[in-house]
Amino acid sequence: MTPALLPLFAGDRRTRTRRLPLCGVRRWSAAALVALASGFMVPAQAQSPAMSTGQARSVNDWLTRMHEASRNRAYIGTLVVSAGSTMSAAKIWHACDGKQQMERVDTLTGEPRITIRRNKEVITFVPEAKTAFVEKRDSLGMFPDSLRTPSNLIPQFYSAREVGVQRVAGHLADMVEILPQDDLRFGYRIWSEQQTGLVVKLQTLGEQGAVLEQVAFSELQLNAPVSMDKLARVMKDTRGYDVHKPNLKKTTAEAEGWRLKEPVPGFTAMSCHTREVPGAAAQSPGMAPMQWVFSDGLASVSLFVEPFDPQRHTQESSATVGATHTVNRRVGEHWLTVMGEVPAPTLRRFALALERIR
Image (cartoon, rainbow, N blue to C red; front, top):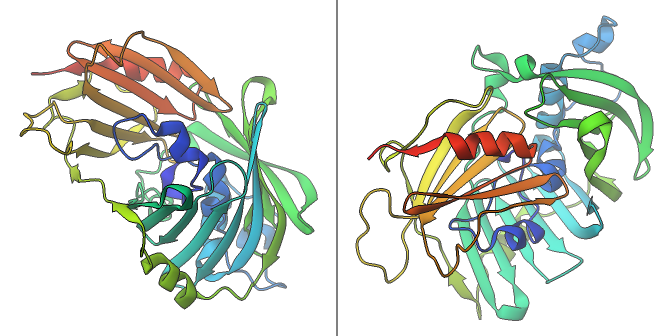
């Protein structure tokens, strides 16, 4: 899903995108759980208006409930991610005080990584390499306010359907399907813990409901004693680490000389950044590596544009890992990589629509 919804599940996300020009794709699948992990803080005996009147919740009702859950609830859990034949796991500590949120994510499979996030500030430690990456991950701004404004397009492209109740990691959870209204986006099946709304399991659904990727807590302790002060101390302790901070500049695609010839229905441009290449001479507009992010409120797509390099950019191609699709294409003197958790034809529409305007 999208960055708007989640505190990033680090590790595998960075590995998948490490050759791309910027800091990685904002998406929600694996991390969705941690960030869509949000739901009305409803007392145990309380019910939402939709429940009390017997009405079915709308897609906005479900997403608002899920989004709000993590703002006031601490938890500790083990998160398991499966995509195709690959599987990974991480331990998560999440703390909040109503105003700010902090979490620590330790990978349990693959290369050891420790990621700590405080609101938008993120640091990822790679112990074996004694390297730390510091960055700011801005929300796409889609939640929760836009759910209550005319700019909210989610109900035009998705609907919600409650399908039952199941236990996940020892907790009763409502099952809801978020269904796409066209073939440009995937659907989602979400398990939302009944009392809190916290997302405890999420599946990304392809054609005919096929599960493309799954994220779930294998164990979860709600209202856990997680110390924000302790997390903050670990976050600041970079002794012995080589710290890297990407030099990102907020910009617009138009300022960099790019546009889409035609929009992709439902997707809105959310952010655009360029990255200064260390040691490179001053770069003219349009020559610095650029990331342009689009979202429909749930799914996100990133367009990475960089100068064409015949040594690295040898062949146009496409790839799929779980629900994540990637398309590469040469555009004049530039190389385009489009990545997102959407069907491949959606990415191709973005790729073919991008054009140079100067």
